[in-house]
Amino acid sequence: MPIRVIAGSAKGKKLKLVPGSGTRPVTDRVKEAFFNIIRLDLAGCNFLDLFAGTGSVGIEALSQGAGFVRFVELGRRAHWTIMENLDIVGLGERAEVLRMDAFAYLGRQPDRQFDYVYVAPPQYQGMWVTVLEGLDENPDWLVGDGWVVVQIDPREYQTFSLRHFAEFDRRKYGNTLLVFYERLEEPREAGF
Image (cartoon, rainbow, N blue to C red; front, top):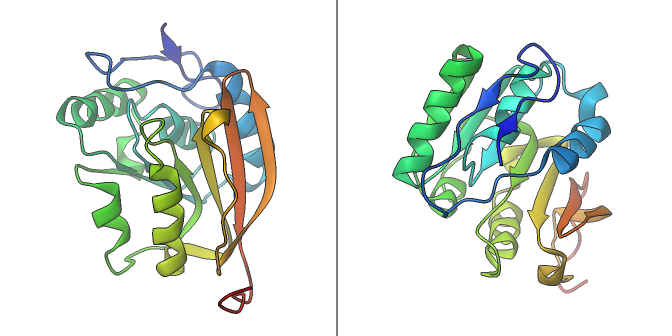
């Protein structure tokens, strides 16, 4: 399945897939729906693409006006694919690609705050919950009204308690579920 940039300055550019079968690129339908939701707030924002895979989501953010995108991807092949795809679209000057573990990254002291964090981890391993718990421990990765958006299979969904984030929306597109969380102005009390 070829992937492409759907809108913005790099619209129509075809992106490379990661060799092998270790990644699952987001479909155009899901990507288009997601960017329709955030488009009005995208200009100049900081965007974090965790478990970035091909880099398709972060590259879409750059194409549609994000000021800066940081891609975090541990896989060697995926890391090189992101670099190649940034070359294809010519948007690398507003991007940074880190080859490292997403959990180790989130455990660091934040060096930048993000308006959006997009999380698309390997499926059926509960990693998305671990990411949200990590962000809850270190919420300063996000601006005060920042969003975390998780891409999972609907069968993986579960509710759980967070102090600094609250789920506010869920959108299902076939076998993909996007779950939206916003950073709370005031953290909830422990044991709420």
